[in-house]
Amino acid sequence: MGSNVALDLKNQMENLDIIGLDNFSRKGSETSISRLATKNIAIIRGDIRCQSDIDALPKADWVIDCAANPSVLAGLDGDSSSRHLMEHNLHGTINLLEYCRKYKAGLILLSTSRVYSANDLASISVKIRGNRYEVDKIDIQGLSKIGISERFATTSPISLYGASKLASEQLILEYSYHYEFPVWINRCGVLAGAGQFGKADQGIFSYWIHSFKEKKPLKYIGFEGKGYQVRDAFHPRDLSSLLYLQITKPNPIASKIINLGGGLENSLSLSELNDWCEKRFGKNEVLSSQKDRPMDAPWIVMDTNTAHDEWNWHVQTKIEEILEEIAIFAEKNSNWLSQVS
Image (cartoon, rainbow, N blue to C red; front, side, top):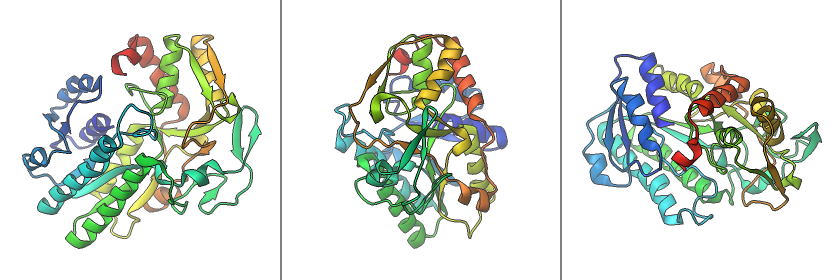
């Protein structure tokens, strides 16, 4: 996200000076350096967990916090520890808040739909329509036929990942109130586009398409093993269009926390995504497992009405465009998954 946001903002404001901070701990992350250099975006090798690295940064007007371990299974799956997760997602944000307090810089947090109650998400009443789930009964606060709103419960459990982001949100609001610098918190659904690394637990659209292109076996997990679970997706440049407004034309009475996502029109089930991939690349092996994964949910679609009403924001990039963009990238970058995971 960081590299795409930087490039998109630079395209919208050529006189903008942007500095990127990255510890390059994730395999493949250095592939972004050459792209950023084309727009004269400076890159500093540093770590937001390290206060001295933050102290060495020059003064800025705005900080966009894109740094996180973004997996809902982080700290639970054995690939990363709970301390590793909290140091990146929460402690790192605290260091950035101290920077913003010092310089009165604005802060924008890219938060997540996973701050919402895992129990409530899992208990959404759904029915099968074609090869996807759709909402059946509206019996949960903050839920409607079009998606999950900001009024949806954030009660525990929400995953360690979700808890780290929710705690960051609360601290950001407190710092903003007491130290008087502007903040925005954008709870993002699934972001997807070309060049995304893609793993089974994050970047699912990219992961599925690249796996199809590379003829790697895939698996429907849980929910009867049929791939009926639904997610919506939106493109990084649509997020960047809102960040541009939040930085250049901040609305003082707008909600500090808003949901962002592709919405119902930009949603697909795994089964529907699989059908698209078959038409694009031909058959591929897809296994089935009825074993449930922790923190999984049958239907997560973001209700973005607040963003529409307060920022006149809406998704421009349709889901078909996103999928085709990823597919073209996959054709040009063979074995992408092994390079970045």
